[in-house]
Image (cartoon, rainbow, N blue to C red; front, top):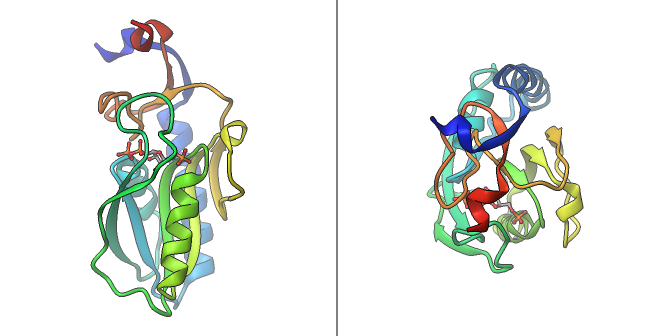
Amino acid sequence: MLEQYIEKVLISEDQITQRAKELGSELTKDFEGKNPLILGILRGSIPFLAELVKHIDTHVEMDFMALSSYHGGTKSSGEVKMIMDLDTPVNGREVIIVEDIIDTGLTLKYLRELLEHRGAIVTIVTMLDKKAGRKVEIDPDYLGFDIPNEFVVGFGLDYDENYRNLPYVGVLKQEVYMD
Ligand code: PRP
């Protein structure tokens, strides 16, 4: 069972569902008639994006992009790599980036600049914000939860590509990544 590797549950499945409902109705109100493009950042955003879009009750389109900066460990490499670009043209388009977490902010800073350079009007939604980790200035427009400076996994977040399938956000036991 995966639970044995988890120190504590930080945010439960119910809390995430409830918050996704609230954010979904705010987005519905704010983007009614604007036909935004929901842009999921692979891989971590998928569980939260899937929960969130169920609660957006207006026309949206979806596309995906793959970026990576962690390359497997618990610390950001500091270098953002694009692995897969999106397909949809974004010039003049409202684009809602959906992320699982903002930590150093490097991924989103890179992405926002790239999309704005292509002419998109960018909005940022993130499930989690670890403000203590920030290295560059970037803030979400819509936020699920602030979290403390701990290494978290679950609901899309991985350690070495594992634990993304946990139905909650939890703190990984240190011994898992110390040996
Ligand atoms: C994680 C996460 C964000 C980014 C946030 O992605 O999904 O995209 O790191 O960290 P930052 O604010 O320090 O840039 P990761 O590179 O681990 O790829 P993944 O989504 O495939 O896990």
